[in-house]
Every structure is written in C-alpha cells, then in structure tokens.
Image (cartoon, rainbow, N blue to C red; front, side, top):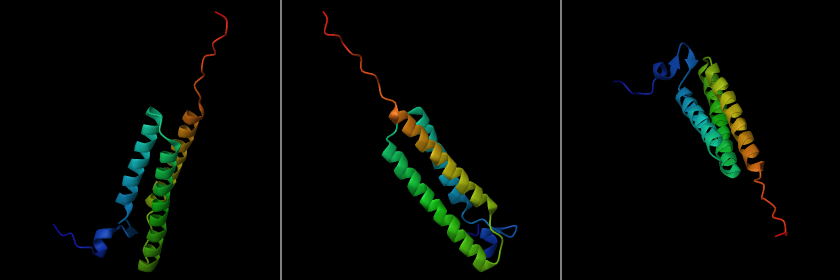
Length: 115
C-alpha cells in the first residue's frame, strides 16, 4: 500500500478532498454532543466550550482548504462547506436545547404554616 502524500492521494476528480475525513469526524462529534444534550442534562458551559472550539477549528480548516485550493489551481470541495454549515447548525441546536433544559426550574412545593 502506497501511503505517500502525492497529488493523486488528496485530489479526487479535480477537487481537493484531503480534509474531508476531518470534517466528517467533527460532524460525528457534533451529532454525538446533540444526542447527549437531548438525553441528559449537560452543563451549558461544557456545551458552549465544545461547540465554539469545534466551530473555530472547522472554520479554520475550511479557510485553509480554500487557500490550498487556490494555490494548487484546483476545485474546492463543496462538501466541506456543507459539512461546516451542518456542524454550525447542529451546535446551535445543542446549545439551544441545553439552554432550554437549564432554564427550566423545578418548582419547590410551598408548605403552609397551618397544622
């Protein structure tokens, strides 16, 4: 098996596809966070930290893939852009659900002073 980094290994059908597995893995973690937030009450700070780091990293990957595509004069992968938008929307949904769950307060029963 040839594992060298050559042009034919990271360009498929004249589009840059080297970073697609990283976007797919990040999308998988975004979906996993959304499932965890739906099933269990998660701290809003954990959700915000993970979502912001994930969106920043995928945004930088999208930016750098655009620079690489421009330098190599090949087509960019539109899949990467759609992955970024999906990751952004999933994280926004996870944050919103986490906020809704944390804003619900349990009502404490009031006891009357009468015996």
